[in-house]
Amino acid sequence: MNPELLNELTKRIEQLEFDGARWRREKRRWTWAAALATLIVGLLFISVLKIVEGRKSVESDRFLLRGKDGELRAAWYIRPDNSPIFELYGDQRSARISMDVTSKGLSRLSGYDRQGVRRTETAIYPNGDTIMSIHDQSDRPKITMYVNHDGEPIINLSGDSGQPRISSRVRSNGVASLVLGDARGKKRIGMSADSEDASDLSLFDQSGTTRMEAMVDASKSPQLLLRDSQGKILMRSFVSPSEFAAIDFLDRDRMVRLLLGRDMMTFYNKEGKTVFSVPSPATP
Image (cartoon, rainbow, N blue to C red):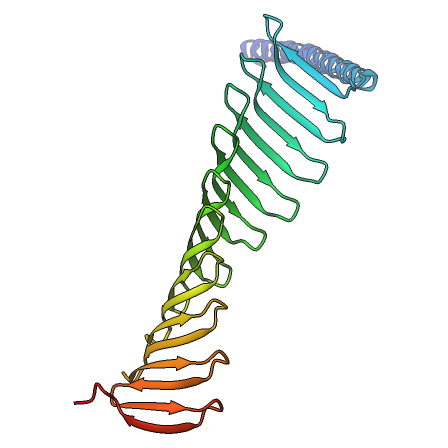
């Protein structure tokens, strides 16, 4: 064999043996490093478990937070009726924000002014009503917005008596309404429009009884109703879909006693039967 070739083969075999030995050393080194890392992680995990197992809860019926000046700035406590409340205080030593759940299941968020008077309130009632109100300096609700448990949105504007003076509402049946009331809370004017394109305007007396009503029904027929103190219709003026215009006069049993049309005037008895008819005075 060629001495030069033999020498070259010998050098390559020695290099392979050297590289193999180095690779084995590196393998052992990484094996030990991985084992050490696993051990450290295991010890940390066991330590955390021990800490968690040994940790104790802090229990109390009142927690107070004070500022650097020693003044009370927050309080979290249980009231005598066993309901929880959380309060944040301002620099006047009075609550400015409070969150609570009452013993009857009402959840509430309230905001107060510097004098400690409640000015805003957001609440969810046990029956599902959700309410947001804005109050005046005497804690009287002036603007109230809520969605009741039937999903109906309602907005009320109230006077000094606390009674709603303006109330708007969209009912679940599609009727939108606007009611104006007096200082005693009695409705005096009402307007509504339903989902079938009918509209209505009503005027009420001091007792809240409807006395006059103007409407346009879904057939586009206008009507004007005048009622007595009991709310019974005494006179009705209308235009039918066929463009027949007339005025009805009714008795207290809601029976038509006189029909005044464009061309004819008809009288009826108590049973609703025609007594006699004459040409209308408006007939040329």
